[in-house]
Length: 384
Ligand SMILES: [Zn+2]
Image (cartoon, rainbow, N blue to C red; front, side, top):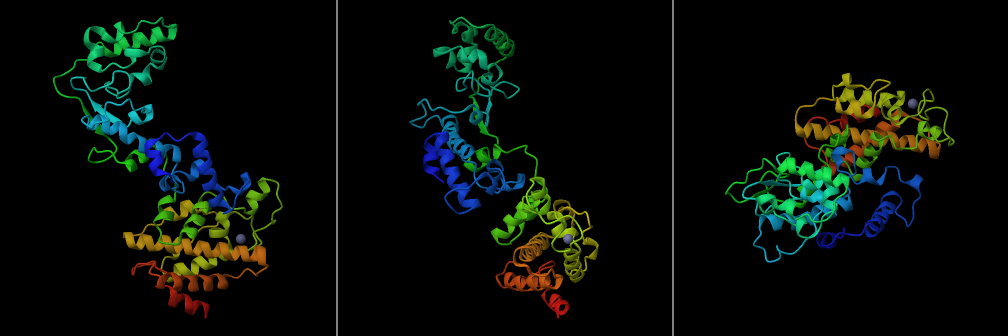
């Protein structure tokens, strides 16, 4: 990512679109071009943090804004910097991240800073009025604007009807404001110590979004990235299973290729299918948790998040194990569909056993409950 350039410049949208295109084709196909059908998830969602259902790839527009916010923050927090007098353009979104505590009003910008009691700027409340004034009237500090109604006297142009309405709003808002003798203070409200960091600025743009079910479970596992990405797509129901193919009028198998009894959906393949349930019951018996056996209608996100486990290491082991089990179920399904293999729960158990041994020897599991390493001997007896 061009971080240095993004700290210095507002990247043009054309540049951002060009970089995003390179990232998009690399992610979905690893080649020069992709069509819409190749992209399983909208790029906007891909470029969201894990916890709200994204893949965690940076959103370049917001990252650019977060990095550029640094200069605006430094101008306010440390006005003795030699370049602090320069007219640095700061977006309204970036200004909104900085909390201003009103003192004597000398350092606060009348129109753009968030100094009103409701923590909004006048630029946000009266955009029409601000768009119709220019020059000194648009550059006043709070103390200049409030002294003998300086903001009103600085407006010389003829105003539209809406701007006049805005003018009355400003008049009402500032009528009761009293300034103190203290210096104005600025605080970065998105970090514990009140100091700007680029990561806290970037995270602030995603505050208030709804958390995605299962996201914590997927990304806290220690499985390989390709397996975690598989689970991310499974939770979003983005694989070309029969239900999605039929919705688009594409050729699809009439029944689940593993059991030949039900419609094929990703939740059915990984949880509700009789073949999958046989695999799960064997493994859950080894953990002494047969009560966790998925129901026929279970959904992946709901089933996974409802499992209660004590201890962080145990939880991480469980998330890693579930990822491996689902990964092996999906690989077996693909070998049935594309290589004409015969559906066989024992083969899936063998695959889990050999993969589990490899993952254990790579140190992926903690030496506590719910690791596949503690199941290996048990599995081996079942398979034998
Ligand atoms: Zn099935």
